[in-house]
Image (cartoon, rainbow, N blue to C red; front, side):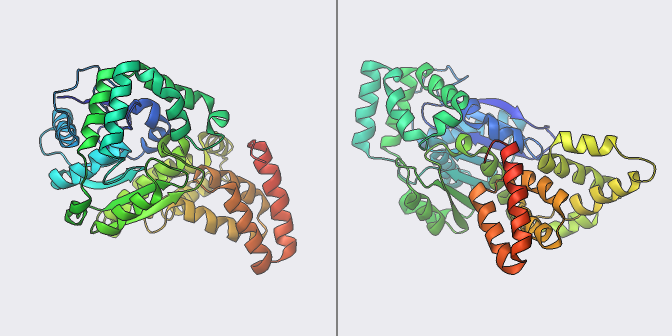
Length: 395
């Protein structure tokens, strides 16, 4: 077996989510930030390519994307038992392996989120040239070019620790393993087979991605039987590290949309189960510190109200799969501006950023409220937003 699995978070009793890496990265360096957000809902594991990350096995002769996909299935069998189904998300080469899984083992995959990838990536000659360059000069010779391809302008300045971790992972990658994966990509082309894929697919593109541009992700979404595409602004080739919160939320919502109708499961929830689910979401959206303060401040007068909010608002509404959390945040902000609930507005502005709402989108929302809620309401909301975002270091 040429891949190894690494535990990235979550309880084994939760649905299994398997994450795949990009060429020259380790799955931990690429996915750990997003995995923190996914661990509340999934048992998250990732796999590394031969010679990459924790996988120090030598690449097999004649490595192909299909053989890597088969090894991913074998690794899942070894971890969770033969026939175990799982959700899958992969970036770049990891996305190519995801497409191969959907063709070769569709009964094993519940949903697939394919990021910054393509049904064909690059050209055969280009991959041969890169493999030859690595064999001659080593993976360290790829660092400067990869830094330019992988990240949107300014990312390395905004998040030097994550960027540095990925570039170090590239330099530490075994030359033979890197070259073997380049060889596998010379023969990978499943464009003519996309129509065979019936598993729900979410294709995620980076607007600034040059190696796998948005048009390639749109092609995947258009040609599979059940696909849709999302383009992330200010993201290049490594979406899981450039936009971890947004990516985690999209994966979560994609699995929920593709799952069975939730009403039967929700109707069977006990009050305690609804409260537990609500507390999980409340902590994820508002943060542990806020929830801990609210819980600690509860008195005999207010304790039952706190339980009511957790069960009814967070357990009854925010857990529903019909809207993603990002959309719920936008709706909530509008309602709070309209009603003049300024303390709650500041709290939910922070929550909106956690849920992937951008500062630009907050600005547009507040401009919209100036028309439909009134200029004085929007004026106050802009002041609160300016102060709140400044506290977050974003304004």
